[in-house]
Image 1: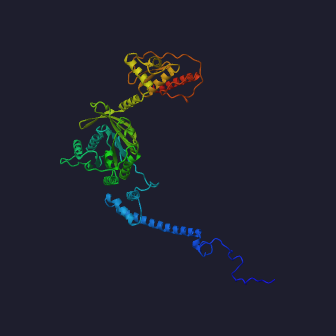
Image 2: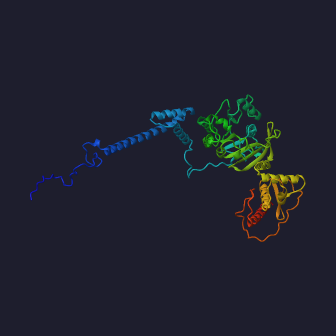
Image 3: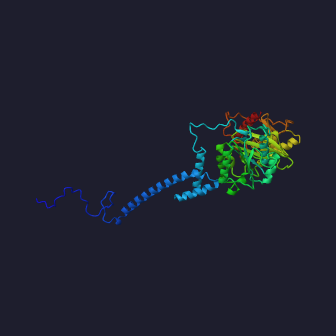
Length: 521
């Protein structure tokens, strides 16, 4: 047979020839033969565009990283300038390097460089000793040393005057103020009184003995800001106070008031952001062990509540403080009563209650204010009484005034108008009402037979009144080992008669009353 095929090329092989007809065509470097018209292939154009974009992005990324490194190298020089020039200078440097950064990003980089210079960037490592303060107080039980303290009080209740008198006594070497120990020597003090003019500040300082004969500031006062020479808690103001702290480590800063210092920031008091300047200031002062006392106004309707709840605006502000001190008038409706209740609580230890009074320029402590604080709690409890509880309390107090002695649950069922204690569940509900009033410390309870007898709170034991009638003996019920599932002792609406369930509730209620009375005994 004759072979009519043309002689093969030495490098050819039948399987080396490309297939005839149309097929996928890709540019060299992709793995396919060169096309004659690559512009006609959309897949090829897409691959080429993607590769070009990756190269450009990579070059841009490398360029940005180099530019950021160069900018960070300039920031240490920038923060050596006045604080007002930091942001504009850093913004201009970023633009010249081709970086598009927001002001918040630039400010964050500036803050990191500043913290790194102070040696406060990053966590405390395992081989680094923590800072241990020998004593946590500057004013024992009231103000913590080297921490942010929040002083809360109503307008014109004497917050600033008390602070000035405290500083004056401490600077003169006094060992105590209002009966509480002053720890160590008085440090350098800065007064940021931006809510009052210079004349008011001068009169207050002169009355406390903190001015020299020529009217200038006397030690330990090193700086004074007033409403005419204001300082606000914007980044510039925070940095200025941090610089003061760097020059006076272990110093004392009084900022009065927070509302005036944040006025230019347009912050909503009800928002959590209201506490942001306080947190930033505490962070800036913490490296230097500065004791910060921030004065804030109390809420109008909550000035008599506990320190943590008395603050006006968001609760984020008291949450950011290490110690909270609240001052409130004992009798807000009686201008002649000058007594104040000072309450302090926080991370330093147990809560403190002090009954204090200002007489001219002299402050006096009348002892513990625990009973005053308890009386305020009782007043608040009275305001939250239900109609049934109020009617029961009125009956207890009226019977005592009329000489009828103590009141029993049976008296409550038969005499208390407005209690709605009729029916089979009446005695059980009466015991609930009296038990709830006892827990609020509005009445004293004692056990009489199988029941309870009560008298108004604070009254000494006197006429006992008729004892509770003995409960009729009924069939023995199941043994009860614990009070799980019992109804709460708080006043509730009448529930429909449940037959045996009502008797079981009565027995459970009797055991609960016995536990309550046993604990009080």
